[in-house]
Each structure stands twice: as C-alpha cells, then as structure tokens.
Length: 245
Image (cartoon, rainbow, N blue to C red; front, side, top):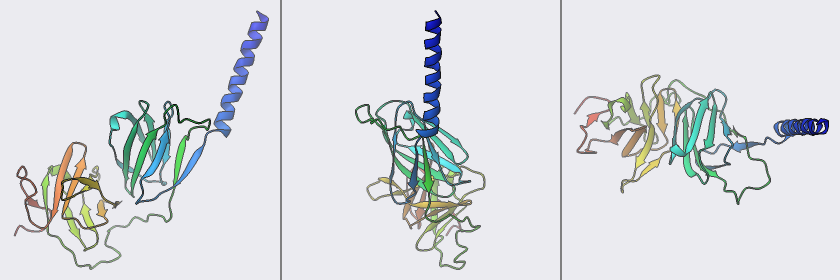
C-alpha cells in the first residue's frame, strides 16, 4: 500500500515538472512580418488554439473565412484566437482591422505531417513602419482633383455617407461606431476579389479606382458604381453623394 502511494506521488510530481517545463521552455512563439500584398500561412493542430497578436491598440472590425463554421474564433483587444473544430481544415481567412487587412491560408496539419516539434501557440506580427491614424485620408493632399460621381444600390445600412476617388485611390466614409463592411472588386466575369485597402477612422481607403465595387457585412450586401449606370434590376439606384442629375 505504501509502495503504491509512493509511486502515485512520484508520478504526480514528474507530471507537474513536465507541465512546468512545457509552459516555460516549449511554448513557441512565431514572429511574422506583416505583408499587405501576400497571403500569409497559418499552420494549426487539432486540440490547440492559436493566438494572433496584432499591433498594440489595433481593433478588429470583421473576420471572414471560406468556411468559418469549421473554426472557433474569439477576439479580445488586439488578440484573435483561432481553434479548429475538426481535422483537415484548409480555408482562407481574412481579418479586417481599423488599420489594415490580414490575408491568411489556414491549414490544420494532418496526423502524418505532424513532427516532434511543439505546435506554435502564438503569432506576433511585426510591421515595417507604424500606421499613423489621421483625421482625413486626404489631409496630406487637401486639394486633389476628386471624382464624386458614384452611385449605390443594396442594403441601406451599408450605404457610405460619402464616396469619391482622386484618380489613384477610392475613399468611402461611413457613420461612426458601425461595423465596417468588407469591399470586393467585381470583375467583368462577375468574380469577386478582395481589394488592397486600409481603414482610417470612419474611412475605408481602397488602393485603386474601380468601376464596380461590392460591400459585404454578413448576409448584407451593397453595390457601389463609379459613374451612372444600372448594376441590377433588383435594386433602385441612388447617388452616394451629390445631387441627382
């Protein structure tokens, strides 16, 4: 009886030491350079949550994925927590914040591909230059030649308060304290593609000019068109800004 009790206490002691060693020495953190024009790869394992640490004070606006039902997601401050619900998950993942857009390829490693290396617990992002928020996206160039001839259709809750372009970028202003939509370009064949953009206060700044743009927020969608025209017979067209012609 005494021998059995001794062996039990020894096993508990060894287990506690093992856990302590894992916490202190074997919890890897990956440093990832943020690249706005590159799809970054996240590799995960079943039973493990991954913590994405964004820039200090960066706030998440929206998260989208090709199959978001296969992921458990949580947000707290500038941390995004991701845990797969089943093996073999392979999907794209986008995280829109008040400063930038992150694009990922999220892969859950199979049993055959798992090595003896400990899984990554946290990904900390590094940035080449800090993002400096400004009151207006045009404050550096206060008098550019602006094109304000934009029309809108779709969900009224997604309609921008103001839309224009300066020949290089497109600017969309939304009401304060609302969840911003995610903009997509609409190609000639109808295919939708995420666009390069950043967020400054209440503005979404798209890094190009587009003839047609789609706004999505959950099941809601809206259409923005550069110059008058009919986007869909199912929607009434209205100008985003300026008077009707």
